[in-house]
Amino acid sequence: MFLKILIIAMVLLSLSMLGMMLNILIKKKGKFPASMVGHNRDMHKLGISCVKHEEIQCHNKKLKKTKDCAGCQQLV
Image 1 (cartoon, rainbow, N blue to C red):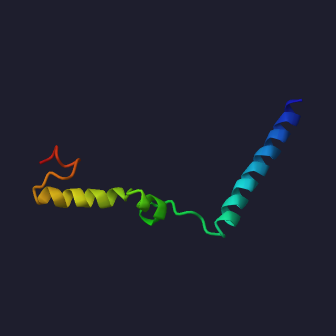
Image 2 (cartoon, rainbow, N blue to C red):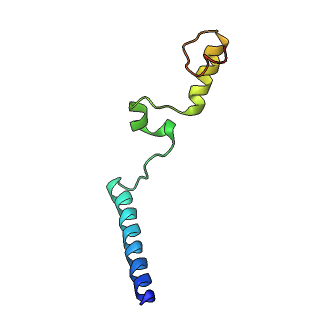
């Protein structure tokens, strides 16, 4: 009984994984979606940028002694 349930669960899991894989490959025309923040257009539209880029901007503002950067206000 346990073995039948295990086999059915494995088959259903395999079919769902295959369906998700095909959805990504077919729907996006074979191109996997960009996962890096700097390369993702949708994140760029929302104003989200790379943490390293934000840190560099924050450090540059700190050197110019401006308090525009929220993270640098504590350091200045």
